[in-house]
Amino acid sequence: MLKMADSKKLESFAKYSSLMKPLVSKFIAGNNIEEAIVPCEKLTEDGIQIALDFLGENTKSEEESENAVKSYINVLDNINSTKYPDRMNIAIKLTQCGLDLGDELAEKLYRKVLKHAKKSDTFVRIDMEGSAYTQRTINILEKVLKEYPNTGTVLQSYLYRTPDDAVKLTKLGSRIRIVKGAYLEPKEVAYSEKKDVDKSYIEISKYLMKNGNYPAIATHDESILYELLQFAKLEGIPKSAFELQMLYGIRKDLQYKYLHEGYNVRAYVPYGDSWYPYFTRRLAERPANLLFIMNNMFR
Ligand SMILES: Cc1cc2nc3c(=O)[nH]c(=O)nc-3n(C[C@H](O)[C@H](O)[C@H](O)COP(=O)(O)OP(=O)(O)OC[C@H]3O[C@@H](n4cnc5c(N)ncnc54)[C@H](O)[C@@H]3O)c2cc1C
Image (tube, rainbow, N blue to C red; front, side, top):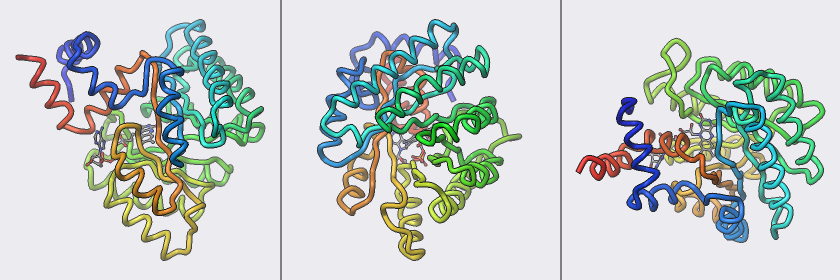
């Protein structure tokens, strides 16, 4: 993990160095929706579906949270003017809707997005953030699910609690995206060993593939995907019963491979100028990315 001082240096380096541009634009589709929609149109033409993420988290004022929601309404309108609107949905963070300012505000703003999305039957997924927000996120989701079946969330296999959450949310009819988890968590709540996170990922995914409501298997881990797709074949689970999700800019080859094999594939496409926290999570997942930057930073 990065030390605070390194992290600050990296942030200013990332923002001002032209060297960083290619790496940032590998993961981030553009500074605004007009830029981001261009690669999305190309991907959807090919058959890859999209989850659009307007970057931003931990808003500090009601106004900032309202503005984020306005941007999402704008995204929904943009989706509706594309050639394949049914191939696109959105991902949102509750801390972007003001969760740090209270559950009530976050629920109110999230409902605003849901109401607008429902008009065009667009699905809205709440991304899952650090474990301090897990229960609050699930509580809010539970409150809106009946009125808005066009929503769902994400569960992280590194959390010990996730098998129970998967059963509970499945029974409530929620769609679930299963991921390994991208935040630094204490060992009181999460596995720290990769092998345990992976084992948990496989078990929960199998449960969701058999019992879930169109789950999203979100990973770039080829050996896990191989095991899960073999499992689906053996269990007679049709390809249409789930989708595979990967991040924009990561393992594009795999995305197209599975698409051509007849699977539903969705790319998670982030855009916007608040890209720094998202970008550093991607760097932390892959030492090779980080090494590239560090080598150039301190020369
Ligand atoms: C669609 C999608 C949505 C997500 N939403 C959330 C969320 O809401 N909350 C959350 O906590 N996390 C989320 N994540 C992130 C997730 O938790 C993991 O941190 C991330 O997916 C890396 O784990 P992995 O499953 O790909 O497996 P890993 O074991 O980390 O990686 C497997 C292989 O994938 C490739 N790879 C993985 N990451 C990178 C990278 N950054 N750069 C280049 N190659 C890479 C490498 O080849 C690596 O060997 C999401 C991930 C995806 C794909």
